[in-house]
Image (cartoon, rainbow, N blue to C red; front, side, top):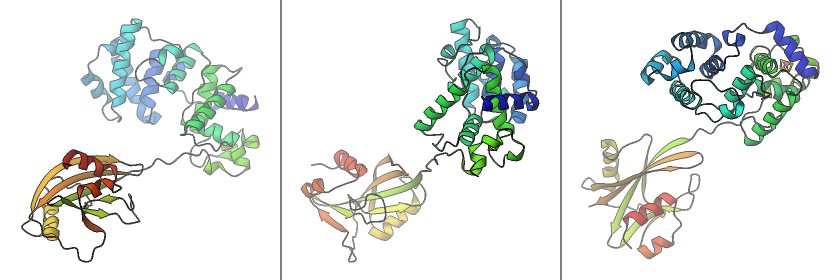
Length: 349
Ligand code: SF4
């Protein structure tokens, strides 16, 4: 109870006077919540006012065209939010005759309304005891209770959501939800929160253990690397040239075909790529683009192109990684999926 009391006391003193705080109108709360997602309050406020002026009720909103909504949205970014809002408004007009629903269970079924928004609208408009869980709430709970489960993991979402809900017991949902979000936004800020003036300081795990900078924990999103593989298909009668892949890269020791990797997407008629093919396989080589495909791995996206070559000159230059194989042997060699797909689709048995 100490936690909840300190947070709500702090809120009554420090809360910002924002227009959507003085209403229980679910439509107005919805407008503010969607507009403020991924947007700072200062940037979102004029948009909120403009939308409310243009569309004073959800029925007015539902009657708008997509072009009108996007025009009003211009400059706010993430335009799918604007489009989704129009769908939500039209759904409410159809299903609820323009009366904005206020219960969590009804809200969550609407297109474009997720768990956070449903909890915010239901608690702020009808006082339903649904705890909100946004970035601010994650941060406050992770630091105060010292929880290092990543907040963007399935386990973390479950753990934080149960904790947030249990903290709401016995509280006024409307005030408590507003209070913890505002506390996270203004006091327990992501970077350099001023813990010296924080009312939770004495019991805060992160402050006592000097872990404010390392909580909450977030799993790093993998940035996939794009690669561009151009495979050369060289046939000699019934034989085909294959290559054993070296260590130090993907598909180590699997078999593919002679490869030219480019830094950027080349396309099937790229002059630079064709020049490289001629350098390697003779100036009179005839190049036939065969197929393109995309292959997604955990850390990489491979854009693959296959070219069949005729009239080539091949120089093994002591390269023991490449060899001619017949179809039976080819089928026995381990291959990455892109290669076996190509073989099945384009090479006759
Ligand atoms: S003491 Fe610091 S880290 Fe802990 S809740 Fe307060 S502001 Fe956040």
